[in-house]
Amino acid sequence: MSRVRSGRNGREAAALGALFLLAAWGCRQKADPMETKRAQMVETQIEGRGIHDPRVLEAMREVPRHLFVPPAEAASAYDDRPLPIGSDQTISQPYVVAFMTEQLRLTGKEKVLEIGTGSGYQTAILAKLAAKVYSIEIRPELAKAAAERLRSLGFRNVEVRAADGYRGWPEEAPFDGILVTAAPERVPPPLLEQLSPTGRMVIPVGSFYQELKVIERQGGGYSEKSVLPVRFVPFVGEAEGVPPAATPGSGR
Ligand code: SAH
Image 1 (cartoon, rainbow, N blue to C red):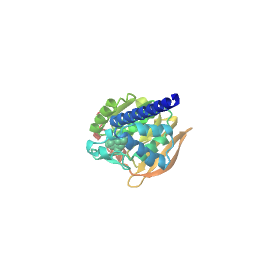
Image 2: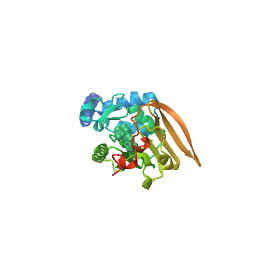
Image 3: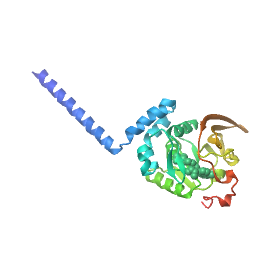
Image 4: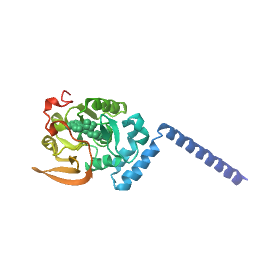
């Protein structure tokens, strides 16, 4: 008798437990309907293509990419491609963001410089993985929107400056990592100088055909390797021979 009762109680408890889990799952889905899409993006586009740094994967699972694209593009935010973000600029393909970030080998203690804030998406990923991120965007309207977006999402370890990134951020140098998301024809020398003695820079170089380069400071010199063929928007301003006073963000 008592066994029968306890069996029934057990079944009721199991049914209640299942109901509770279902309700909790329902709330989770409601809280962030894009979470499932994001998890799939990480699994197929990123982990599936060989990115293994668990911290990078976690950051890519957490940052709500759909809030960094214009509302009309939100439904495509987790697609395997770059997307327009206004002002003729693009947010990079998720895989490229993850790949570039992994190359910096961040542990959480680093000071990082980013050139080309754009939407602020890459900035947010870096902010999850480093101690502090300084990001420079040459188009003032993008810099302003990105800074506001990052603030409203609760990122407190980020500073955004509207300026030409060619000369870096000398007041805050040296940097343990420098990540550039616009392509110059040659690496700007001031950025090389602002790398810490063990720092790494990830930068696309070239015009039509571009290579993603990883540059490491080693003793008195630098080592450089090409790691991926890429296609980024051009690094404009002083790198193209435009005098500093003529660049849109030079007023800061
Ligand atoms: N990382 C961005 C993608 C930005 S696209 C994201 O996640 O959304 C590249 C950005 O570099 C553009 O916003 C462009 O305006 C900016 N850029 C181009 N040349 C620059 C320069 N000299 N200094 C700073 N930003 C520059």
